Length: 346
Image (tube, rainbow, N blue to C red; front, side, top):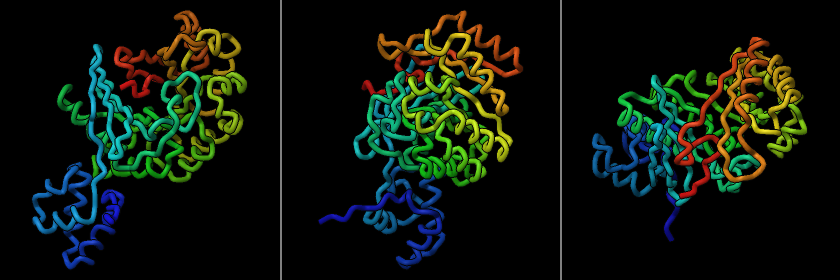
């Protein structure tokens, strides 16, 4: 009976060094292999040319590298690239490269499917199958960085955790992945260029503040009226607005980092005066900015894009109260790569 080999990327550098010492080799060999795994993002022991053939064979006998494979890549008319990423167990997630004039942003997934039940989102219709491992999150970033260099002649500049899944429901693996992405032994990216987006898991927002994270926080708010918010995202009954407000105040007190609210404006759901007033009021609790997001219908259901007039009213109300607001036009709609559309149609 074959024993199941361990994913070598689940080992720390110290554990790798110990493994080599225990097998009669030098500790520094662990450093070499660690560099291949992370900074060089190697997916095969065969690549590790500065270690002997015998050592590579020993690694092969003891470990696997559970890496991703870009199964299918689609390019949108607007330059957006969507990757369908196959995991080692055959499951698929999606990640997206979003280019602008000056930068490229990777939108990465943290779960296969999603734990949550937002009514407007295609991903939420897939049940959560499992959390992604740190290496699988890291690999999505490496793949998009390569595409950014290939198509746009510059390295990836920003990362948003806004793909499939609720990042804070896979907290430890997401934090480990970010540690490697920002480490000099990994990709060396600045944490200031990373945004983790949550639907508002209050106790985990506080935990992030206690862990003194250096990245940015975005919250999918969509309504500052409890009943409406619960209708849009039924699971938020577990994270009521007063509790979210308190968690965000705690976050700001600890980190001094502004919160970004994501607010998709829907016709007849959250685009009336009462909704806008509630949003303005909620925005005054902590320093923040608001991204008003253009909606991409996933069917002919009740969630439809609000009128330009409604969006203008929203912006005016926010700006009159000195709240920075931006309209985010959706990218990659023609390849189902826009917000709320990631659902593995492939």
